[in-house]
Length: 477
Figure 1 (cartoon, rainbow, N blue to C red):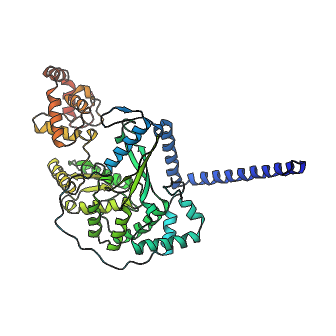
Figure 2 (cartoon, one colour):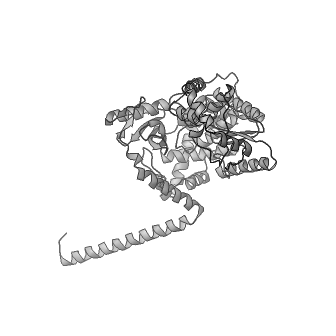
Figure 3 (tube, helix red, strand yellow):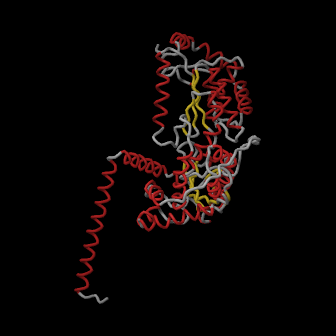
C-alpha cells in the first residue's frame, strides 16, 4: 500500500475505531463481571479467584525441584519428570488388597432411548466457561458459540457412541496437572492432588450419561456429597443440632470422623461395575462407562515439562464430570449393610462421621465400617495427622491414663503433659498400618525418661486439680 496522506489518515481512523471497540468490549466485560459478583454464583467465583491468586502468590506451580521417595532433592529436569511419572503411575495403578466376591449380581438388560437434543442443551448449559482444555484444545465455549449446529452435531455423535459403546480414541488421553494441597512440603509429590484435564466434548458426553443415571439410581439420605440440594453446610448443621440436643439433655454423644486413603484413586473398577449393576443401572450404561475407562492414558504436566505417557488402570478419573456420582454409587452400595447396623452416620463423599451414645458402641460401629470398606479395597487414612485417637486408645488399653484436656482450656499446652510429648515424637514417624502404629507408640513411650515423667507430674498439681473440678467444662484458675 502506498504511504500517502490519505492512507495514513484512514489507518489512524481505523486505529481509533479499534481502540473504541476494545474499550467498549472491556467495559461490557467488567459490567457483566460486577453484576455476576453480586449473585450467589459470583461469590463462588470471587472465592475461586482469591484462592488462585493466593496459590500464584506462593508460586507453587513453579516448583522445579522435588524430592524422591527417600527425601533426596532432585534438580535435573529429566529426573524430576521421571519422578512425577513414577509417583502418579504408581498411585493410579496400585490397588489395595480386597476380598474376592463370591456373590454375583444380575444385570439389567433393557432398551435405552436415544440421546435427545434437549439433553445435550442441558449438558451444555451445565458446563462452565473458562475451564482448562484437554489434549484436543477444544473448549466448551466453541460448542456454545455454534448454537443449534453444535447441538445437532453432538446429538448425532453421542448417539453413535451410545449405539457402538465405543467413544473416540482421542477422548482416552488426558493431561494430569499436580495441584498443591496447601499443606506439607511443596517438594513432596504426596502433597499434590492430580487433576486430569480431559476433552470438554467427553465431559459433555459424561454429563448426558450422568443425568440419566441420576434418574435411575437412588442414593441414601446419609450421603451429602455430590447430591443436588445438599451441601457441606447441611451436614454440619445436622451434626450441630444433634450435639446441641444431647448437650441440652446432659447426655453423652460420641462421634468418630473417618477419612479414606486416596479414595478416588483406589476405587477398584471391578467394584464399580458391581455397584452399578447392584444399583439397577442398565447393562448398556455399564458397558458405556466401562468404555470410558478402557485404555485410558495420561501424561503429567509439571513446571519442568511433560512426562512420557502411561496407562491408568485403577480408580476414578479426577476432574471428570461423571466420577463424583460414580463414587457416590460405590459408597452407597459398599456401606449398605453396615449402615443398617449403625444408622447414626453421615457421609460427605469419602468423609464419614459415625455417632453413638457410648464409646463402646461407636468403636464397634467404626470396626464394622473398617471391615466393610477394607474387604472391598478401601482403606482408612492412617497418615500421622490422623493417628492421634489411635495412639491415645493404645495408651489407655495398656494402663496409661491420658488426661482429656477440655476444649477452650488455657492448659491445652503440649509441654504440660506426657500426651503432648508422645504426640510430638509421633509426628516424626510415618506408620503405614495399625501394627506399625502400635510399635511406634510403644517405642516412643519407652524413650521418655522416668525422671521427665516425674518432673512433669509434680509440677502440675494445680492445673490437674482445676481440670478435675471443671468436669470437662472450660477451665479457669
